[in-house]
Image (cartoon, rainbow, N blue to C red; front, side):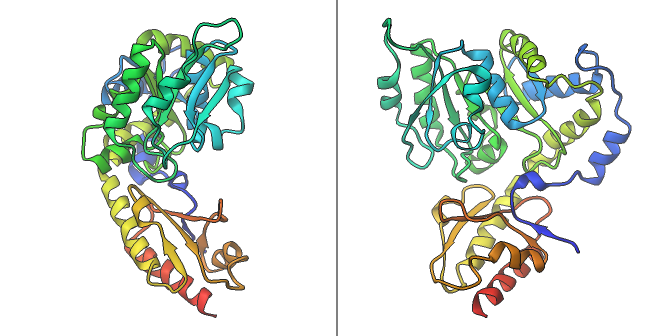
Length: 342
């Protein structure tokens, strides 16, 4: 059975062009630094986001945790939102890998208050940890895009206090698409940025960590320590180049399909769609009317060729991507309507 997969945009399969480029990729040994395709990818990625250098890493979580490890000393404190990916979905890795303490602030649907960040920066005191890093996320994993003025204010605070700012930009190209700006206008507000090649961009594996040359040189050793030193990685790098050169240019289609999906879902009695949160390719909604099939919705839809994740904090999330068509959306909505009407 062919499945329509709404669980995430991480499920995107490589395109035919990616597979062809992967097949003919020229490779070397990336740990030795002589894989030409990875070197090309890193150089292209760094220029794309306006940074001096970049490093290919296995995953987004890996890239974020490598950034913490590289920026911070053990025992440092990291200021970040209580609902960000690093806190909520990276299995407590910050305490295990970098040995840092997370100081979480309550966010307004992903937006952090710059004044509160300023107030939480530690003073010099025998009893206090040092504030080693500030982390922001854009696009946020709640589906919203953070305004650039908020990022600028936070970055200014970091610069004034000589504290680096790291951007979890897993979907930074979605953010730039929503804001209708060059991605550099987003990434200029941070010292380092991680972005994924496998979230909505169809590359099978990999993310990029970018920053200054000094930062990336240090991160390269940290990548080896964390077990991320890959050998003939150019096969993956070839897909990453297609992802950055071509797939980033079509994300508006996924955003439009998310709006279409949200509009059609809202026609089903009992479904409440969070329209104000549809900034990128994510549709969050809940089913208000009690129904016997709601508890088994994941299993029921799977039997009809649709993959979804179970609710999180009471909300369901459907994610559009390259492989979700308008025809798929019609089938999804018709199927859900049928399931909830029985």
